[in-house]
Image 1 (tube, rainbow, N blue to C red):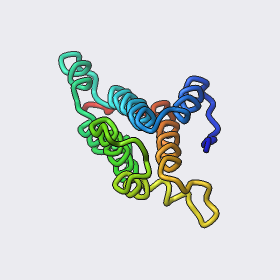
Image 2 (image 1 turned 120 degrees about the vertical axis):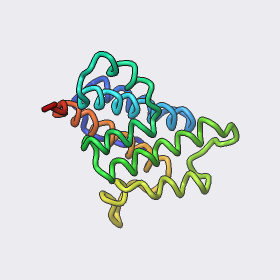
Image 3 (image 1 turned 60 degrees about the vertical axis):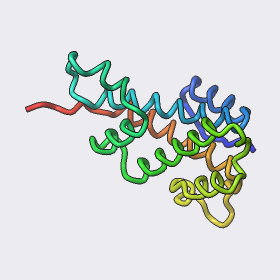
Length: 159
């Protein structure tokens, strides 16, 4: 199933179209990679710019720390943090378990069911039923949400 979200950015739309046609492993890894890059950009936009620390230290943060730092600086809320951690966890399963070939495996399916954005938008007539569709929609949603946050992100001011 192709998930359709209205995107004004042609590069993001192109990525999402290609991402949905990838194998499950590639989709899990590429979706998270895009989100992780956006979290990195958000931190660079939000944190105090100090040339001694700024560039190298932010780039060296692992994904978990990037998510938590975005949360602690108010760039993302608790629901976004939880969903991003879950997307990262799903990506990790695909990246580190060669035998994993589908989103329908019980542990992956359970993680996809826990994505909070799906519960927020889902109703009894929802078109988002399959685990991969839940993952795909969540990634697409958070790409657009983080891109929007990037446009409005303000640097923390020093006193």
